[in-house]
Image 1: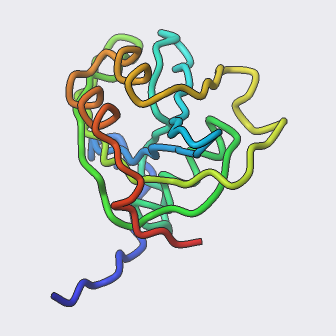
Image 2: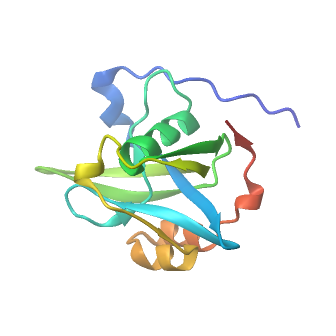
Image 3: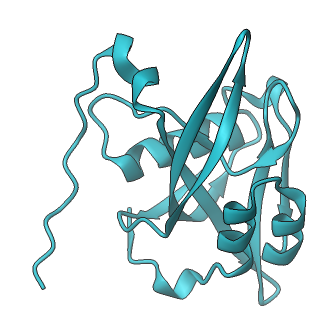
Length: 157
């Protein structure tokens, strides 16, 4: 089967929120032979989540996920253009709740920064996939984390 490469998105700024689609990264590493994933806290509710955000104009969905991993968690590395799965959640906004769907892409962390754009607003923590699954609120996300297998990721730099 011939797969076409993802194309960069063109999203007018005023319409980004209408899409209700976000892109996120399952950031992972091997430490002492054990798989770990990285979660960050959200800005307002302080719940644990993978780095994620709105589509970024000019980037592929995986590229948007990689940018969010840098901005929210201070990590970079090789990302797969293959979506591992999706989950839904409700984004709590002032005066309005917004239903969202998040497409997740695996990112093998190769660099962890000591300073990054959202460091003052978030915490980051490495944990086992099982522990990460127990820390998130969304059942679909918990299942994706618990069953995460980095061996299925085709990574690009």
